[in-house]
Length: 407
Ligand SMILES: Cc1cc2nc3c(=O)[nH]c(=O)nc-3n(C[C@H](O)[C@H](O)[C@H](O)COP(=O)(O)O)c2cc1C
Image (tube, rainbow, N blue to C red; front, side, top):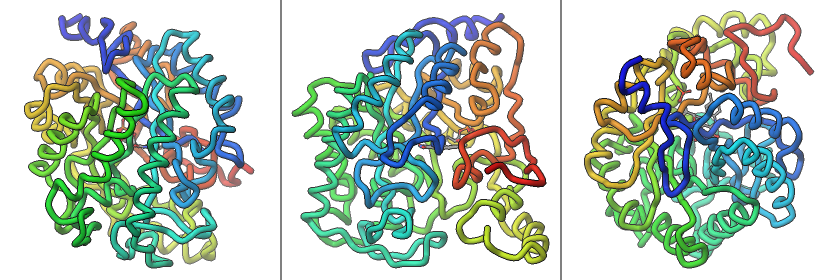
């Protein structure tokens, strides 16, 4: 076993937490919450399997801080009310029984959701329609509404702490509300919340300042976009500046991702666009007549190729950020082989790595890698898991839909 492989599986400290190794389960929406957004028995079963299976730490699927920021995907976790704390406490206790830290990812979906789901108007820094969620123009947030959102993130962090989470992760990536503030593509404001980087960052600075004031040194991690391929969107140089601001604002660690939902499947990439899954479960396509779907499937595959490379696509951005800050950096995105993972750590590209899809197919992937039973994940990067969560609980579909979909 190479020296670095041994380092990989040694205990390591992340934001004051002790992890049994450097492989983290990245935030993965599971579509398993109940109507109020509380986790239940299915979450507990999955998270226990992840903890027993060797994950160094678990980051939950995104949990909504406000009703208007709820995901359009099915059954999102919510953390918008104190009444949810006991259900989360049960989950954190179960994971802690296996000596695994658990971090709650907290988010507001901004314009990447639908009023049909939230029952409220969609909101964004600027009233710009999204290419995918384009049924409605989002409402431009007022000063007062921004203040409310800051308060909701701070209250969510307080609830997470009371529920026994070892930390929270602010979702600043993938085109959701806080990413919309950071990117000039979606933030066209001319007031103190838009324009220069310090203004676009202000909402996050305020959230961090107030969490620090109320929760002391409670770990607050973030997930940011290193880039997003959008016109005037996020670029690595700007992401590096944001990383510096994050460190100066008391952020505990930075996970580096990329992309937006609008971009298609650039956040989680793969060789073939998952047309059939999209046509089966996406709100825009699922009610189309079957013959039309047959025609559309190959067309979508042709017109929506996944950007390349499919592996390690965030590593350049992660490396640039790691060189600019002294807090830990976590790399994510197509790191599915032991060789990829060890080389990220060995080259100093990141301090930790996280994975999502490999844990969907094998919750015990870390133990398998450690015991030498596997050199790589069995994930085929079909991305059906990422598409089908719009309707069905998270599972590995292995590139195939059953002829009759499950109820
Ligand atoms: C089914 C699924 C659900 C996801 N849900 C979230 C989420 O809730 N929050 C988040 O930040 N990223 C989410 N992601 C993105 C992953 O955390 C990760 O950034 C991406 O899949 C690339 O990593 P991978 O190649 O290891 O899958 C999700 C990905 C998948 C496949």
